[in-house]
Length: 121
Image (cartoon, rainbow, N blue to C red; front, top):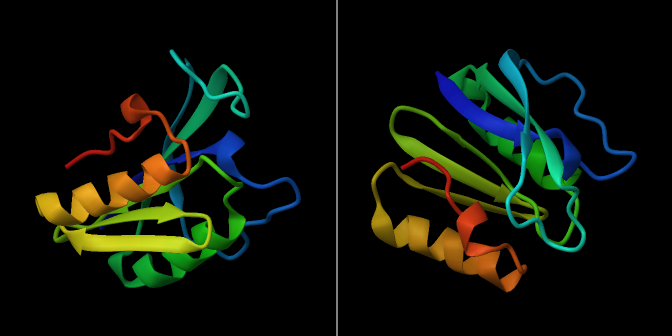
């Protein structure tokens, strides 16, 4: 089973996620402590689940739909973590600190604040 979070505001204007077999488990609104200049101060978080077999398709769809420069989506299977940026997907074994560090380093190059590079281990 895949579990993850998608920030609704991270989707590029005009983007569509169609045909994705996601189960939304929770929708919540949160105030962001330090949004970047191009991020709104309140985000809508969609906690979702999906079938493990859909991991690659989901990563591709998110990568195509996310806005630039400073957005990402993350999800995980029992064995792997996926961190998806516009046009780039990081996939590494859960708990792999080198894989996590590589994805975080890439996020920093996009101007994502350190406190936002906090997906679950």
